[in-house]
Structure formats: C-alpha cells, structure tokens
Image 1 (cartoon, rainbow, N blue to C red):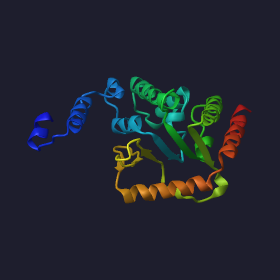
Image 2 (cartoon, helix red, strand yellow):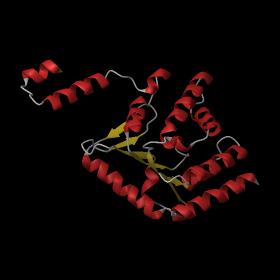
Image 3 (cartoon, rainbow, N blue to C red):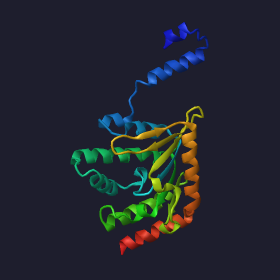
Image 4 (spheres, helix red, strand yellow):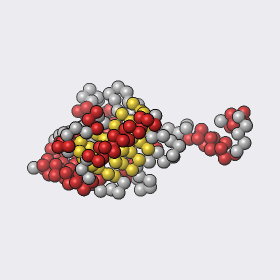
Length: 228
C-alpha cells in the first residue's frame, strides 16, 4: 500500500497513514471466525459494523431478540438434519451477536416489525413461548430497541413477500445494505434504487403496525395466553 501511494504520487501523509491502517485492520479476523464455518458470516460482519438495523420478519422472532431456548428449538426445527454440535454452535453465535444490543457504548439501534404469526407460532412449547414473548417485551423497553406488531386484522400489507433487513452504517460514505436470507444463498442489495424501494416498503409497514405501546401490550396479552 505504501509503495502504491508512491507510484500514484499520494503526498498527503494523513491519507497514506489511513490507507496503511486500513490494510493492517483488514488482516484482523472478526470474532465469528473462531466458531469455524458460519453460513452467514458476511451478514454478521455487516451487522457488527452497522449503526442501525431495521428488520421485518413475518414468521419468527428476529435472532437479536431470541432467548436461548427459543433459538435452540427454532434452529433444530428449521434444520432437522443438523447435528446437535452444529445447532449449539449456531446458538452460540446468535447469543454473541446479541451483545450489540446490550453494549454499554454505542449499542446497535434496532427497529423490528413483526407479523402476528411470529408471536402465534408455538416454537418449542407454551412455556418457552411465554418466556420468549416476555423477553421481547422487556427488550422493547430499551431506548434503542423498537418493536412493532402487525396484527392479522390489518390484512394484506407490503411485507407479505417475506423477511428482510436494512443495515445502515455510521460512515455516511458507506451505502446502506438490504439483506434477504435464503436457504442455500443470501442476497445483498446495495444499489440506491433497491435500498430506497425496501426503505419505503418498511415505512409502510411501520405505519400499518400497532404503535410501540399498543405492540407491547399486544405481545404481553399473547404471553398471558401461553401462560394459561
């Protein structure tokens, strides 16, 4: 990098030092590499660097807000041919990711919109679901976490096509990224037009969802149903 700066006659020492530091930083591996081969390691890297995350999920509680028992039951059910050791590794990674939510300095700004079906789908047993929904209510009270629910009675809405997430970064020079999880491969959209379409769709979802207080009460009521 230093030699290339000389070739291209880059004389500003601040730029040279910055590029040198970036080259050094690129050699450092993220925490997730210690877990071995993780299918969505690219996404974890983006999530680790993101300043804010907007998530829509029509089927399940998002990974950053899951309890350990819920995550274990969900992964085991979604990947029935996965070995117990691999399930445990995925759970450990998921719990490690959640540290961004509880970080004392610069926590991740998380906005989640859920479909009611994510609350009604009984992953594991009723006791597990009650615990999960109570945890969701608790997390929603954090100042940097917002949870909204779209009830069934809202009918058709822009999120019926499936789950997606929008990642935004602290550096204005970094473009936002739309992440769509797949079975064998994931999709990352960075073109401004694509990101804009998903951002507008997310605004419609937030507008059609219950407000924060209504959503919190809605989740708490379903948790009580599981308790009964």
